[in-house]
Image 1 (cartoon, rainbow, N blue to C red):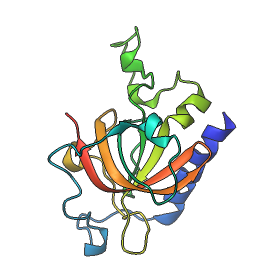
Image 2 (tube, rainbow, N blue to C red):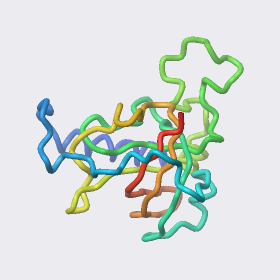
Image 3 (tube, rainbow, N blue to C red):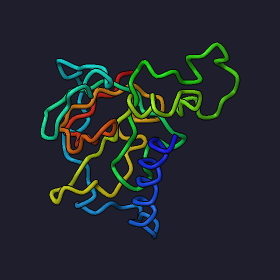
Image 4 (cartoon, rainbow, N blue to C red):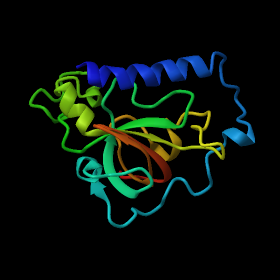
Length: 174
């Protein structure tokens, strides 16, 4: 449980500490997402996230398939970051109690935390300085919690079960 909680807490602290003000209606050019980020066709060679994580090393180019989820708020509100989970992760909408009115079926709250960490990744879109762009991805090209995505990018960090991917292409599947 602690191994799962630490990355989530670090991401929350990072996001809370970096942007104390509210975002203005107009984004600066520095906050703009890269042109062509949202792909109109699925990139070839996509692997489910859990399989792609096996042996992934810093600098590897990857094409991964997953679902936006793994926590109540898998999309950072003020950074181009999200949590992606393997399609095999059991979420409330996949369980027998589907339709029970769960307000956040994508959070995978019934999944073992260690298993969830092993089947999740942090995905970010970075600027020229290598920092996450200062704008959220929610709604961009249809990105939303519980949406299947195919991410094309580069492994930035791979340590134990944790992995961070710098995305340069996002295909929203459905």
